[in-house]
Amino acid sequence: MADSDIKYGLAGVMTDDTAVSKVMPETNSLTYRGYAVQDLAEHCRFEEVAYLIWNGELPTQGKLDEFIAQEKADRGLSDDLIAVMRKFPEGAHPMATLRTAVSFLGLEADIEGDHATDRLYERSISLYAKLPQIVAVDYRLRNGLEPIAPDPDLGFSENFFHMCFGKVPAPEVVKCFDVSMTLYAEHSFNASTFTARVIASSLSGIYSAVTGAIGSLKGPLHGGANEAVMHMLKEVGTAENARAWMLDALATKKKIMGFGHRVYRSGDSRVPTMTQAYKAMVDIIGTDEAKMYWDMSRILDETMVAQKGIYPNLDFPAGPSYYLMGFEIPMFTPIFVMSRITGWTAHIMEQLADNKLIRPLSNYTGPAQREVVPIGQR
Image (cartoon, rainbow, N blue to C red):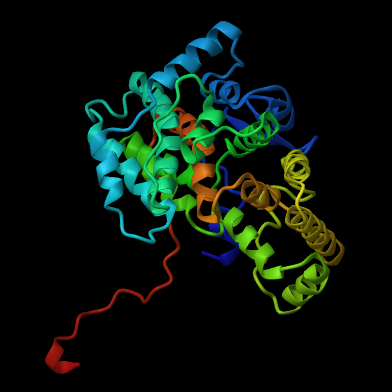
């Protein structure tokens, strides 16, 4: 087989049908069930977007109220899981603790019929409801603080801030966070989603599939990029140093996180909306440090585009936005999981609705078949 016949990284290969999302080439817009994500971020709460991704249509007020009530009813972690989380090794990355906690949820669940279609939706909502508390509990425990129980009077995003910090910030901050949840919710057959579908195709179960997806998202070339962007900004240090830093990084072929995308060629359609949220956070915080990060980001962006014609992706504005909201850098990718659980589980349900085991071929490049020589004759 010629190298030209092999699609390394499965680049350009279509492996299945999906009705969940698509980047529309004529508008360069990412769409969820046909709706442009930037429009959803502007007009809808994340709860509405989660409902859309799972059900195919935006909810009426009555349907939304029922959905929110179900999510609130599914909040809460067992004492056993919190006890296990207290024993996690000090210094473990939050993505590793999240992966382990989700696997523990699978242990606690009644696994009979775990892959049955009529059980998948309720398990999806349960994961969606519990993931924010897992992230918040882990954050508080690693900082020597006691967990805060979920508040049934608060919405999805407000409740997460409450469980992390014991208070809810201004509505403008919550809106910026909610926008990020919508933008991160789904993106077709990305690495972690494809991982989830592969695992689901073996009928291993939804918790196995989500645990595997978390493992895939943990990598810096995928979900971990938002953390890497913030580390990069801290390394750059000042706005005055930004252009020289970028030019040196390009000259030395240093890996620069937050730029480029396998799907987009003329810019990630989610970036303008998240950049607006980033600027809003800078204005809300109003400190010299916040303004410095904004100026630094702008110069890095302009330099990269001018030198290479490569545009930023969603992680570039999302990382510093989360930082300005008060979240620690290692929390950024777990927050991504809180959003992407909607897309992952939608794809798991879609995969299992008409399942075929995913089993690609490989091009063997090793030696031809040969005989084993006994050890004394070697």
